Structure formats: C-alpha cells, structure tokens
Image (tube, rainbow, N blue to C red; front, side, top):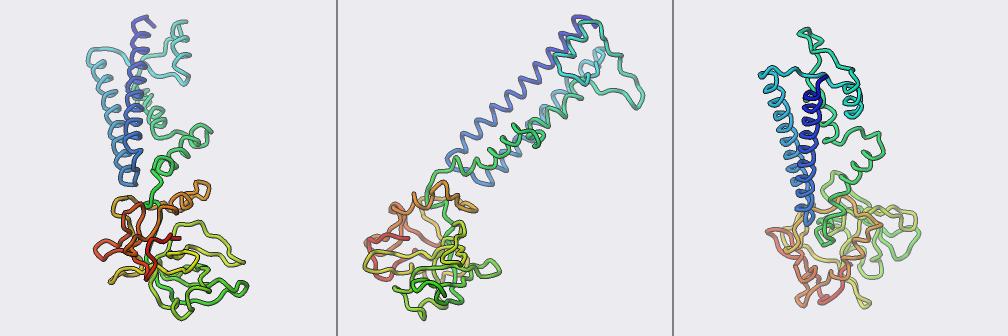
Length: 310
C-alpha cells in the first residue's frame, strides 16, 4: 500500500474522530443548558438532536466515499483489527485486495466503521462496566441536576373512602385513599388525637404520593396526608372548591414535574419541609409561593395561620 493511501486512511479516521468530538461537545452543551430544569420532553428533544447529528455524520461519510469513488480512488476494506494495527500491517506490506463487484463486496472504510461509531454514540454494549456506568449516569441525570424545590413532590387530591384505627397503635388511623389510580392506597396517619374518625371518612385532602413506602407498626403506608401542624393542634389542609380526586397541587413560582419516587438518601422532603408553612391568611405556601390547583384556587388550613406544614 502506498504512503498516500495510508495517509488518506489516517486522515479519514481523524475526520471521524473530529465529528465524534463535536457531537460529544454538543451533547455536553445541551446537558449544561438542561441543568436548571430537566424534564422528559427536554430529554426527548436532546435524543432527537443526537439522532439527527448521527444521521448527518452518516451522510457526510457517504459523501466522502462517493466523491473518492467518482475520482477513481479505490476503497480499502477495514480490517477486523484496531486502526493502529491496520496501519502498522499495511506499512509492512499486508495490502488488502481491492473490492470486487460480487455480492460479497466489502464495504468502504467509512461505511464499515459506521456501526461501531453509532454503537458508541448510542451507548454501546451495556454489558461493559464503563458503558453500564454511563447508562446509569444518564438515567440519574434529572435527579442529580434538578434543583430541590416543591416541584419535586407529587402532591395530589385524594378522597378517604375508608378509615379505621390501627389495631396495634392507639394514635394511628389506617386510611384507604382514592387518588384516581384505579385502586385505593393504604396510608397510615397519626391523627387519632386530633381529628375525630367521623371527620376523616369521605373527606377530600391532599396527599404526598411519591414518598417511599414505609411500615408503621406493621402496616405499609404508601403516602402522607398534608396538615398544618403545631404543638397545640393539627389541621388537615383543605382543597379549594371544585377540587377532584387526582388533581395535582403546584406552587405558582416553582414549575416542574415531580419525581416518580423520592430518594430517601437525598433527604428531599426533609430539605423542603422547613419552607412549607401557612401564611397569615391560612394559605399553604412554599417560600411564600401559594400552593394551588390550577383554575380552582389555593389550599388553606381551617384556622392555623403561620403554621408549619407536614
């Protein structure tokens, strides 16, 4: 093989590496721009951009190959070895045969290199430790980069369809709550000393729905009822008129979608709790931003003003 052919192979390899480097740099820019608020639609947009860039790389490689063929340049089959080994072997006189016109015609360098490049761009073989680590990091991107604010909580209106006292704890109620999920959730609340059982049954309330399930005296609780709470009294927050089962509760100044499940190790609820209070008008708020249901109104406490919410 001539020195000119070797030089073209090395040049094309460098061009492919430069394109991949540009793609990686673009991905990093997108990741940084998404650091403030990453959402599923944003991830889908980035994925679409990546797919578009990969297609452009494919077209550029094909254009290069066609241009060389048009100018009478033979296409050298890519050996099943690393690029360094191939160049070394070629320099020692191991010149591969020219492609034939049969059905077994080997693909040109740019084309044959494509699957490996595309596999790397898409994440490669998940069985390899470094790739598995990259995939794990990608899945955790939203959780790592998102700010910790009230939008991380899944607060929804639910209806207590059944309630009874806990068989092994005098201070606990065991509630069956309809949250619009098709079947009720079991939620355990320590309200026996504060709310009569007849006031619990059939009422609408707001529940935190993405806490990790936890056993309370042997019964698994899958959420938490939201109350204004102080040493003197505990009051269940009241949804606005017209609220329905499944309505999402949001803070006006903190848009975003909730986590599917709060990671207990991140202490998200513990971090947010001190900034959840009722204001002087008994309206529930986070850092002064009212908690409300879109188009229906804010949450309020019956009498508890300037009180911690938990």
